[in-house]
Length: 188
Image 1 (tube, one colour):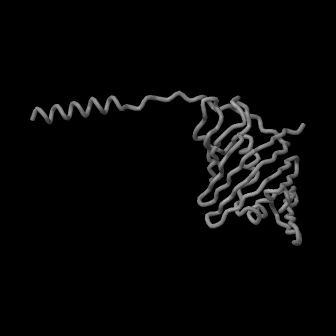
Image 2 (cartoon, rainbow, N blue to C red):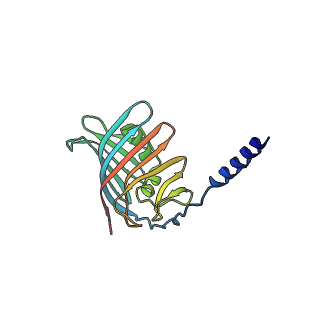
Image 3 (cartoon, one colour):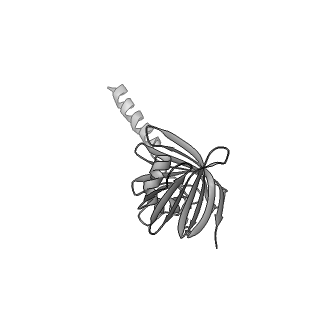
């Protein structure tokens, strides 16, 4: 009987010693989203059945233009999008017209995240309806959920609280998109 009482007391003491200690986290740093930018990097996409990887150049300045490049820099496809629709151009094929760039993005890389979301995500500037689940010690987002997509920030370009993301992974179900940003320029 004494051994049982001792065991219960030891378990209670051990349990108390394992209580959660609150971890200090920094508040989310509010970033202003730039309306025009240029970026270059690499993209890898997987829709659950096939994978695609390419270099990518993106000009976002009222309209959008994406160039997808081979490892040696050859242009594989271009998507141009504006308020009236989007056009996909690729070598040796007739242009494909669609209502939105998302439709065409799915044709090129197999994954079609909401591109207005991607504009915010590459800047680590959450949209109003996004839920930031985790921040780093500088207040930068590490993980957020937006429009059913999970955005994880794997690396930032520097140590400052306002430094831009360098590597991020965007996923929804089986769809995965990894983006490495090698060059970023805000436009005036």
